[in-house]
Image (cartoon, rainbow, N blue to C red; front, top):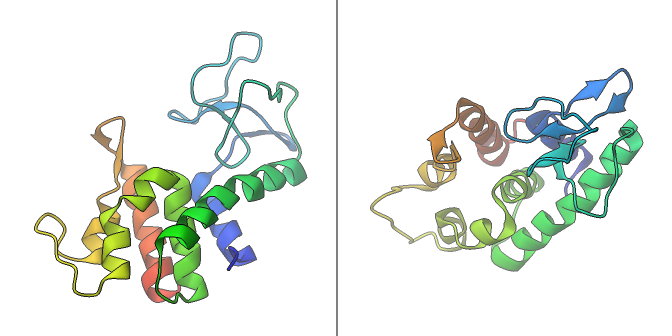
Amino acid sequence: MKMSDVGINMLKNLEGCVKNADKHIIYDDQTGKPVNTNEPLPKGATIGYGHLIKPNEDFRNGILESKATELLRADIANAERAVKNNIFVPLKQNQYDALVALAYNIGAKNFANSTVVKYINNPNFHNSVYPNLESAWKAWNRSQGEISNGLINRRRNEWNMYNRGIY
């Protein structure tokens, strides 16, 4: 499976971006604020829809929407692999899209080790901390150790995509 176009558009909305006119510009992933490109880029420097800038990448002049989408699709591939390599039950497209969105946000390793994966793969799985799949999913609501309203909203949107097919 691949993430659907509708799923990609939902992921774009969940990730958000920072633009100046028609160009995506570099921003701090934690704050969402633009970064001064005349100074060394901070850890977490991001462009487009959540693309963490690598040391060999130079986006100081910004990028167009087409490049932002290209970067997102390339970054999604890792999340798609995480779902493919860790989920062993059949999925509907909306469920797959939601799982890719979750894996994209929390990282492939966290996804692979998550209670979410255990619940999906084993209908008889039980956990005393997270009594069901929804609670395990929505537990991924912290950024730098603090509960984040943005992540609470994101998890709710992903859950609605997974559980109800609402994009």
